[in-house]
Each structure stands twice: as C-alpha cells, then as structure tokens.
Length: 463
Ligand code: HEM
Image 1 (cartoon, rainbow, N blue to C red):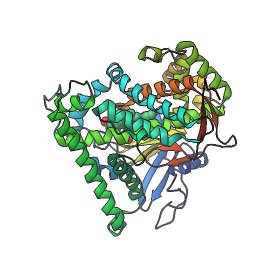
Image 2 (cartoon, helix red, strand yellow; image 1 turned 135 degrees about the vertical axis):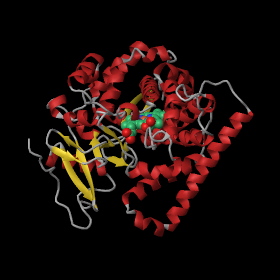
Image 3 (cartoon, rainbow, N blue to C red; image 1 turned 180 degrees about the vertical axis):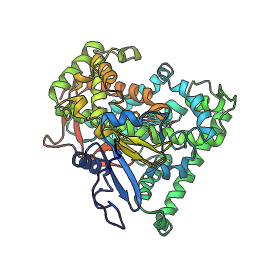
Image 4 (cartoon, rainbow, N blue to C red; image 1 turned 60 degrees about the horizontal axis):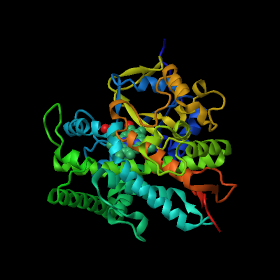
C-alpha cells in the first residue's frame, strides 16, 4: 500500500498549531481534534512535529514494546530537573539506575506486598472521615483538595513512615509546598520555549529553590531512618537495603531520593483525581450510587473495614475502572518508534518522533465500547465482560500506561481508592453542593475535576 499523509489542522509557519491547542487544557483540545481529524493526526509546536493516536487499533500497535518505547517529553522532561533518572523520568534501560530501582521495587509494589500498607492507608482515611463528620452536613467540601491531602499523607506514611499531617495543619508541610511549586512550574515551563526560560527569573528562583527543599527534606528523612532503623516493611527500607537480583547492586542514596520524590508526585494527584472523578460520576448516576452503597452495606455493614472486605467489592471496583476509562487522570502517554516504521499499515513514522497515545480518546473508541461509549456504565467493567473485552480488543483500557514503563504503583492506587471509596459510602449520604454542576476539568501533570463540591451527611446523623 502507498504511504498516506497524516492529516491534521493546518498550522502557522512560525508558531505551528499553537492556536489550535489550549495550553491550559491540552487534552480537551486533543480530544476535540481527534473527533475532527480521526484516530491519527499530527500537529506542530513551532517546528516540532507531534503525532497523536486515539483508537484502540493504533494504541495496540504502539504498545508493542519491540517497536515503540516511552519518550520523556514536555512536563516529564522538566521534572527531570528535580528527580533526574527516577523511575518515571528515566530514559529507560539505557540508564542503569532505572533497571536497578525497577527490579528492587517492582516486587514490593506487587499486589500481595501492597497489603502491608493497608493499616497506614486506613489510618489516613479515618482522619478524612473524621474531618468530614466534623464539617457537618451543610458544608461544601472541596473534594479534590481533601483527596489530595489524603493521598499525599497516605503515600508518605506507607512508603516511608513519615507523617505530613495535612488534615491537622492550617499551612501545608514545607515538603508539600515545595512539591506544589515544583509541579506547577514544570507545567508552566513545558508550555514555553526553552529560549524564554532564563528571563523568568523570579519563577526560576522559586523553582530551583523548591527542588533544593524537596531534596533536603528527603535526605533528612533518610538520615533519620539510618539513625533510628525500623523493621517496617516499607518502600524506604526496601530502597535502602534491597539488592538488585540481576546486578547485585544497591540503589545509591541519590537514586533513593529521586524515587522518594517520584512516588509522591506520581502517586498523589493521580489517585486524588481518580477518587474525585469517581464521586462526581457516582453522584451524577443515582442507580450506580445505590448499587455501590448497597454492595458496601452487604459486605462491610457497620464493621471496621479490612483488606478481606476489599476483595468482595466487585461493583465498586468496576465503578473505579469505569471512572478511569472516562476520565483517565493521566490522559496520555508519549512513545516513539525505535526505528523508522509504518503505523496503521500506511503512515510513515520516523524513529524517535514523539507519538502521543491519547488514552482519553482510546477509552471512548466506539468500535470497542459501542454507541454508549461516553456514558458512565460500571456494569461493563465487571470482571467477566472486562476480561473478555481486553482479550478481544487488546490495550483498549490503559489508564496505568504500558509494559515495563507502566505504573509501578497501580495496585497501591487501586487498593487505596477502593478502601477510601468504600469507607465514604459506608459513612456518609452524599449530594452535589450544586445540583446543576456539570463536569469541568483542570489539567496540570494530571487531570482533575474543576470546581466540584459535595456535601456529606453522616449516615447515622442525629440533628
Ligand atoms: C507510571 C498512571 C498511581 C508511581 C505511570 C504511568 C501511568 C500512571 C499512565 C505511565 C506514564 C508514562 O508512560 O509516561 C497512574 C494512575 C494512578 C497512579 C492513573 C492512580 C490512579 C501511582 C502511585 C504511585 C505511582 C500511587 C506510587 C506510589 C508511578 C511510577 C511510574 C508510574 C514510579 C513510572 C514507572 C516507570 O517508568 O518505571 N503511572 N499512576 N503511580 N507511576 Fe503511576
């Protein structure tokens, strides 16, 4: 077959397609352009070409790790300034620290090992339940803010035994402030040309200061652990003492710091966004709300929830999967061909040219999900249908990324989201603060609902 030209919006000779893409919400723009140009299209940022794929068939093709590999681009490229060759920002096997850290940490993040973190997750979730109970039933909860406090505190406690105590402070812990500056500035820097970077002097001062602060606190946490060793089976001990089964190397202290910061930035907004979208969808779909709550009542009742209960909540697990399908909190991953190749049987693609795999579009492919692909219907995500669909349409649901560069924290995230969602349904009657609210999104490194507020009335509330 003859090579075909990849379609795309016509661009300006100097600025490319900058006017077609809303830099504050690139994903919404890209999904809109996918609806216009089809499942493969290209655009230019200045002179730089980007190819976008947004169907299951093309997703399946770029997930072939023998032909394609992850590329560190845009925000991740900026994040390397702070965490260098940490797991998320390393270039892959070509950086030896990635392999050592991956082999030491992957078994620890495997589902069984994550169960060790249940008590810490439960501890922090209980703090949230208490806070919402004390708010009372008429308080408008800033849902995403509270979930962000929860997920940060839970990761810090379960991975390194450290308490940020975000629910008990007016002002945030210095680490959290520094992390926010680091993440926000990475997003800003990714939007502008590197030529303009030196003139943003105040921003640069704060940015490099935040990186110094993050690293200083991380080194202090390591020193404290070394001074007062503990037998906790947590990530910090695994990183400090684990031995790579392949090379027999240990992680360097520098690599431990890179990965401590990586876990916090990769794990908190992603899971906070998942919980926020989930409650938006539940509140907008009364039948799903009733069924999920009934399941929690049947399985957990008034008891204190345990890890054993979690395995018996298939409908609520399907709710989380469906929420990640409609609103993947990491909305895209960036890959590139290892060698010049042909994509979709007819589109020539050069080696190393960035390909944006748009999960937010792939997850709504009508060939896979049918005419109600845009609807929230958790039933389609129950195990049997979910597994059957994944076999028939490989790589149609990829919220945790692909292959060896896929999410190392997915079991951790899934356990935490399920636990917190179940505890909230068990404890409160929920309602939208503004019944006319319709989902808007905000995008930084991840996507979250914007302006979403809800009310939580304790279920056994006596006025
Ligand atoms: C990688 C999604 C939670 C740690 C990724 C990737 C995705 C993802 C899509 C691949 C990124 C890429 O290809 O560039 C999510 C979602 C989460 C979540 C949707 C929650 C709902 C977590 C948590 C942790 C974590 C809780 C840690 C405690 C990581 C790390 C990587 C990663 C370290 C890089 C892995 C590597 O390249 O070796 N995640 N993640 N994530 N995630 Fe997550």
